[in-house]
Image (cartoon, helix red, strand yellow):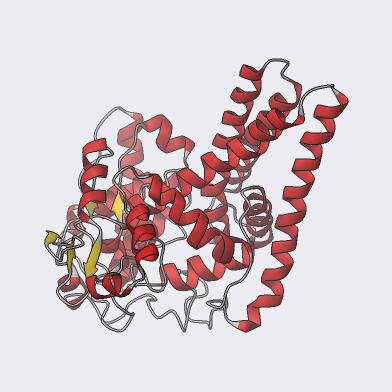
Length: 415
């Protein structure tokens, strides 16, 4: 029996015992055997028992999320009063948030057992939330997972002081707006800098060989949006109602909710005074799970968002489905050294992050303000990789989509 096999068996046994103890009302023990372990293979082995899809749970989640969105649209169309239409728009927006989280997971082939089933869920969900499937897979799998917190390959990349000062005045003002302490700048940044060329139409960053496919998905995205607008307008006219309130409640409001939640979520996951960023992928020294934060949420909100804020373990293995993600995160948090960054969601911490994370010195690894004053010193997590096994599974974006598929890890991966 190999060390990895023994590790997996031990992890499965501890997972089973934890399940029994939860059903009996007893607390699960800490993963003591794994304390101090740094080997990448052993860390993957620790979460391997959780990296198995349950198709019944996956399809049920998809059906519920889609029904939430469709139900919200139906309420917008049929409710006689504006208050009802607003409520329907809110419900549709929450449905888009849930579908957004699920589509991310399905694109990783983790929601159900069937590869085709996962792609159908991913394409349908991403289209509903106005994301381009081909762009998402390359941007998220290859760039984000393969180059986590590497500048220009990730959301909300910070500039250096020199780069900021070299900008024309209007670009400096825009950058300051993006990094304002109101947090509204995060949504502004997403709408201007990210959605048009990262989630809708292919930009220059995408390899040319993927452009044809990406344009096809962009046309699908545009056709869906046009179809939804036409449906809302046609039904409103047929019912003798004003079209504008129906469009605002059935399209603008849900999309705004989704874009705002997505951009704020991405910000919380990878921007914090304790998190490192890197100039390029060559000097990256931190394991990807050390470059993401866990943000504990109330149980109902965690469940509704498919545990998307249990994020560090997702960067260790993207094959853990949402219905196992909390347990996998708890198991990893119990043995990680240095400790994973866990940041309770609070207005004070968000304001501190927005205040501290203006510019980044990629050489000294410190956050600074616009005058160059140090405002945050990230945790030194580079030593975690230095102490780890050289078998990093897999961290080279050119050789893999940046995600760990246990059954295909040794095969050349394609975006």
